[in-house]
Image (cartoon, rainbow, N blue to C red; front, side, top):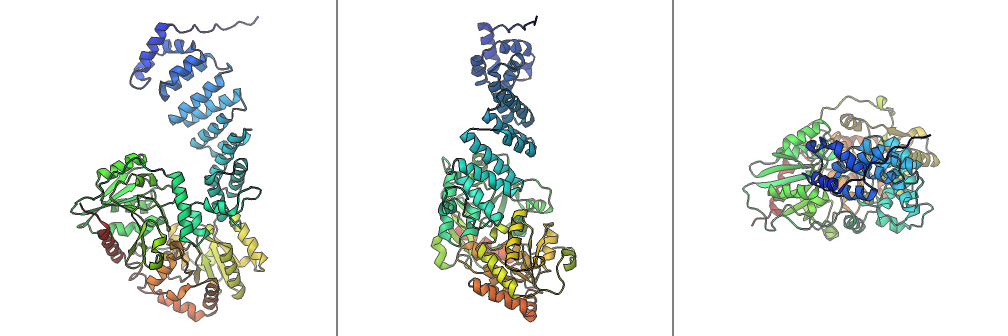
Length: 620
């Protein structure tokens, strides 16, 4: 005979009132109330499901977790326990206890294997607990309905993309779109993945009923710069993205007329004050600001990576203000409290941007700079910092916000002479006596038309090699296949592994000519190349991103390295490769103090930028 465990006695009205008083204390269970837990456990054990849900709904996550725990201790396998395990997981996840949350979601799934929401949350909890491989397995084991299936494929694709597993990520995103095609964010990531993998044409979704123009419209800000050399197209894409992703704030905080400070308060807002290209460009500018006229604030939502460049940037601020832990409203109110005259956003539309802060208009004048080289049509932005080469007179009306054109090149640079390691062609696997063309831009900037131009250049330059960054396995495979299909020997396409910033700069000097990408030019890579004496060949386009390198070359005096079309680009590259004297002349013109007196003149750049700030400052 099997002995049965007695069912707990239901709570009395007195118990019910007593529990209400306990949970009313200071937001839930505290150390003091835990001493009363025996009675609490007895009461909760007697709850039916409606009573449990009624009390947990008003208890707060910490108290609710205790209530769920006590109820489940008494009824671990009742049919309704799967929902209680699920709710417990949600409370634990909100409390930041990801490992415990994962165990709760797993118990819910054990009781109800087709509980798809629990499968989704289990994967998210495992990811938050630092166990991405287990998250992938948890999601793959689920057999969901239509919407849950869409979400599972979406989360799988997102996580695989973050792990740089680009091909399986693209497959998952395609599967999510197969369930429900009208997902602009998923379309955006799929297009950019195809760009990164050099899976051409990028505006295709095989097997899906999504046309190329829809994919183009939803391609997202970064992909747009490399997709079409058209400011109007880029504005359309970014405006749709902003409307979808960054809602307007309920109010504007800064006084429209501005402040009357004796020194202009400039605030720089970024999530990239760390080992990031932007910080390497802007560090000396921050150090050189004229403190008699400017007070410099840094609003920092950047990771603490322990890098030298992060320490240098932070030290350059008069006021370093961490805002990582603040939501957009709180960060905006902090900026307003500091009475910033000009707030300069250094992210634009790049990863991690805090555009929601800008929507509160915490400063009377707001500008975007460096992070995103294209239109940022956010209504609360007043200016985008550029120059007369990147945005000529005839293109001013094509941009939002209004271009603030500096005298000279728009790009800040660090004039310090870097301490670079010794490198050699032999160490890098390069031929000693051949012309070395190179490109160290991400592969998403390479287009089919550009790569075909490179193939023609190499076909006409016998013995020359093309040296490009080893970006990812998928693009390496695709570019190599296209290369060999054109009849070029595989050993003439050399992939450079990623290295630390100093070695990367040093090895640039081993090349003979940097072949720029179009319509999204090299930015920091271009200035790095010119700094170490590597000539750069670019194609002048229409949009800001397609004219960056032209601005740099104009500033340093190499306008003859600017082509007008792809045919001209090929002709100039071949001439440079086949005439050693021409290559030597270009390198001579970059030698000596060419960099220091032009692009590397950080003191001069700072004065020009400060003059622009003084032009746009508002006073009451």
